[in-house]
Length: 445
Ligand code: PFF
Image 1 (cartoon, rainbow, N blue to C red):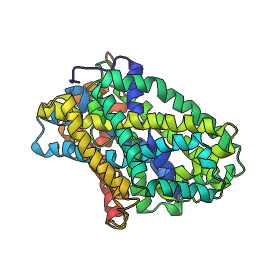
Image 2: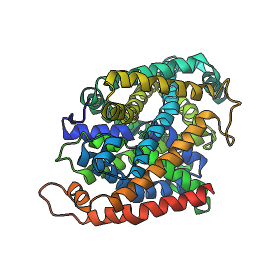
Image 3: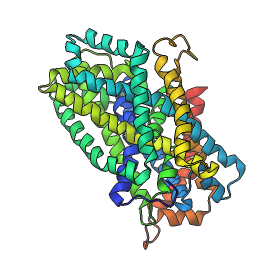
Image 4: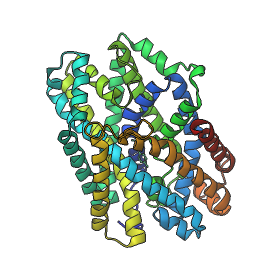
C-alpha cells in the first residue's frame, strides 16, 4: 500500500483511528491499571492526561502525517528534519515490536476465552476454579502459543490486503457493535449487589493515592490507549484526505476512547466487588472477573462468546495499526515489497510474542527488576517509549516545524484560524514537554 492510498470516507477515518485506539488497552489494561493504582485517583489523572497531553500530541502526529503523506521516517526526511528527530521513528519501531509482543499474547487469551465461554468455562463452579483455569491456560506452553500465532496470522493477512480494504471495512462494521454490547454489560453490572462499592472505587478519587508511580502509570495508560507517541497516527494521517478535520478527529477519538475505558471500569469494578475479587489483581483481572459475570447472566454463554469475539476484533484493529507503522516504513524507506515486509516483520514479532507467552510458564524465572518478559515489555512500551516519543513529537511540532504548516493543517479548509489552535500550540511548546519530563523525573528516579 503506497502513501497515495487514502481512506475512502470520513466515517472510515474515524472508524480506523478509533479502531486503533479502542482495544485491549481500554478493556483489559485500563481496568487492571486502574485497579492496581487506587481507582478514582488514577481515573482522574488519566482523564487529565488525555486532555492536556493526549489530544495535543495526537494533533502533532496528524499534522506531520497529513502534511507529508509519508511513513514515520519518510515524514521527517521530507520535512528536512535534523538527524536527531529520526530517533522518533526508531523509538516507534521498537515500541511496535514490544507492543505486538505482549498484545498478541493477550489477544490469544481472548481467543481461548471464546471457546471457554461457549463451553460455560468447563462448568467451573467457583471463583477458585476460574482462577485455576486462567493459570492453567497461561502457564501452559503450547495452548496460548497456538492462539497467539493464530492471531498473528490473521493480523498479517489483514495487513497484506492493505489499508482501505482490510482495516477500514472491518472497523466500520464491528466497532459500533462493540460499543453497543459494552453498554449492555454496563447496565448488567449496575444492577449487581456490589455496584455502589464498585462505582465508588472507580469514581471517587482518594487524593492520598496520587503518588508519582500512579501518575507515571496514568500517563503511560493515556498514551497507550490513545495509540499516540510512536507514529501510528502519523502513518494513518498520511492516508487522510485534505478535507479531514484534524482537531475534530483527534477530540472525537480521545472522547470515544475514554468513554470505552470508563465503560470497561463500570463493567468490571461492580462485578469485582460483588464476586469478592481483588481489584489490584494485575493483568489477569479482566480474565477472572468477566467469566464470573457471564456465568451469572441468563444466556451467559452467548454473551461471553459475542464479547470475546468483538474484543478479538477490537484487538485486531489496534494491532493492524501498530503493524502498519513498520510495514509502511519497510515499504517506503527500504523499498521492500508489502508481502516481503509482512513476512520479515511477522517473524520478528512471532519470536517476541513467543517469549512473552512463555514468560508465564517455563520462562517465568527470567525477570528484570522483578518483572517477567511480558510485564517488562508492557511497562517499557507504555510508560517509557510512548511518553518519550510524545515528548519529542511535541517539541518537534511546537518548536521546529514551520508554524505556517502547523496553522494550515489545524485550520479547517475555508475557515479562519480557530481559537483552539493557539491553545494546542501552547501545549505542544510548553505543557506537554515539561509535564512528561517532570513525571519521568519523579516517577522513575
Ligand atoms: N490503543 C490500543 C489499545 O488501547 O488497545 C493499543 C495501541 C495501538 C497502542 C497502537 C499503541 C499503538 F500505537
